[in-house]
Length: 179
Image (cartoon, rainbow, N blue to C red; front, top):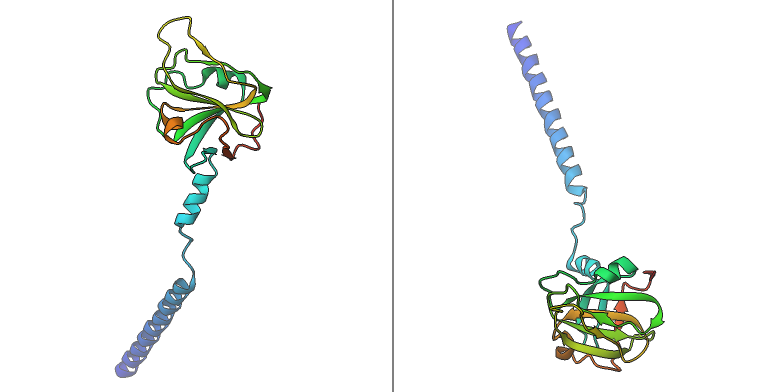
C-alpha cells in the first residue's frame, strides 16, 4: 500500500508541477504579447517645444517669448531680470495699434526693443537700449503705430538682421487676448 500511496503522491506532484509550468508559460506569453507603453519620440518632444509662444525672425531664428497681454504684466515687463538668453524674450500684446513708447525703469540689463505692426512687420528697432540709472528714465518711442513690441537681449536684432520692414512670424500667439 505504501508504494501505491507513494506513486499517487508522486503523480499528483508531477501534475501540480505541470499545471504550474503551464500557468507560468501562459503568463509569460501574455506579457510578451502586451505592448509596452509608448515612449515619447524626438518628434513628440519637438511638438511640445513648438507649442510654446515664439517669434520667428526672417533668418529662421526663433525667440521663445513670455507674453505680456494685460496692463499689470506689461507694466512689470522685464524689470529686475539679471540676464536674458539670446533665444528668449517678452512680447507685449496691445488690444489696438498705437504709439507705445517704452522705458527701462528697474530694468538692469540692456535690451533690443522691436515695434511690430498689425501685419507683423517691423516698424522700428531700438538697439542695445541701456538700463535706466536714475529718474527720470528716457522713453523710447516707435516710428509709428504698433500692435506688438518684442524685447530681446541686446544685440539679438542686429545679429539676426531684424530691421524696419522685416516680416516676423508668430507661433502660439493667435488665441491670446490682449486686455
